[in-house]
Length: 59
Image (cartoon, rainbow, N blue to C red; front, side):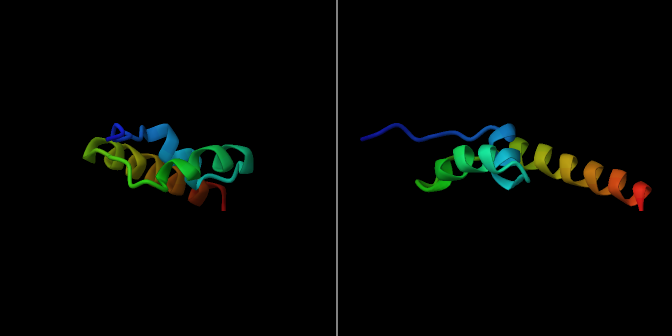
């Protein structure tokens, strides 16, 4: 039985980001239902909120 993969915060961010090279590397890692901890999800949420706030200051 193969080992279960664990996805780190950076991989989640890369998979959802605008850089197509990083998306191409990160997105396939989600094909086999990896483990993602609640801490990783929390960190992703913090990045999304801070990015949203910084973009709202620009516009």
